[in-house]
Image (cartoon, rainbow, N blue to C red; front, top):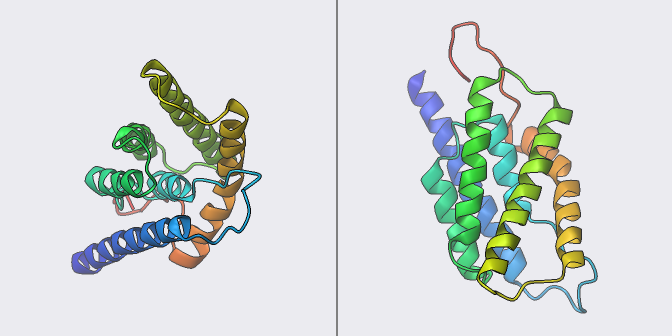
Length: 176
């Protein structure tokens, strides 16, 4: 029984890495013909937040840090800043998820929205302190809104396609 649970966790971790690499490949391919009018959502961030809130045992801190750091390098963002901020945000959500039995989706969505906003605001403040060029505030706000709008779709896809369901109490006392 323990081997089956361990196999499931490792297969979900590999699935997360594969999904992250697929999203990075999509971001790097020149598929957009014209200039984008609305910035797209950060689907990797949504994926990380959904999985950490619903199954905090799957994504470990080193796995999150390595995948986001790879994304930082490939997407030419300041290396390590976004990875560090996401790691801080996910550890906050992980502690919260271990204390709660089950969270209604509206509360999960609200917490994810606040986390996304706090992460983006922290990144903007840090980049401002170090005088790094940034996109306009309007562009950042649109990026925030599209990311928040994509969160429910990523949650539905994770639940129905990959089986990442909200945590439930186990009568035997196990966490998941």
